[in-house]
Length: 77
Image 1 (tube, rainbow, N blue to C red):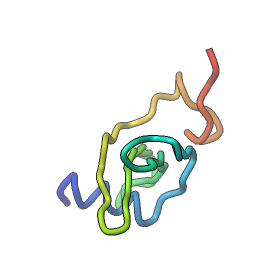
Image 2 (cartoon, helix red, strand yellow):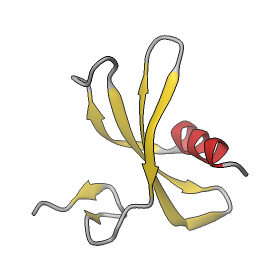
Image 3 (cartoon, one colour):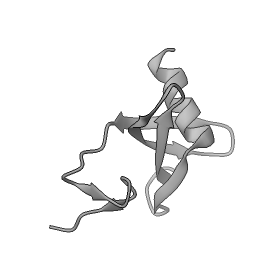
Image 4 (cartoon, rainbow, N blue to C red):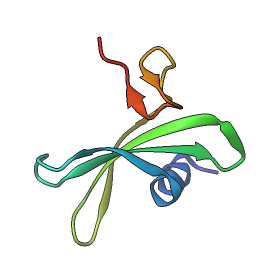
């Protein structure tokens, strides 16, 4: 599966864990999802959307050192 398809799968099936509604030019969202074939590997995808498009901004594997509650809550410094 290509990376783009993986990211779109996360956007479609994942859980929004942070919203950045004031981002410009479009609101953006951080989603937590898991690879279809390996639910042990979490993926965070940040994306923005307008009325017609989804724009993937970045995607990464979250670190246990920076996230808690199954990668859903950012650890405060």
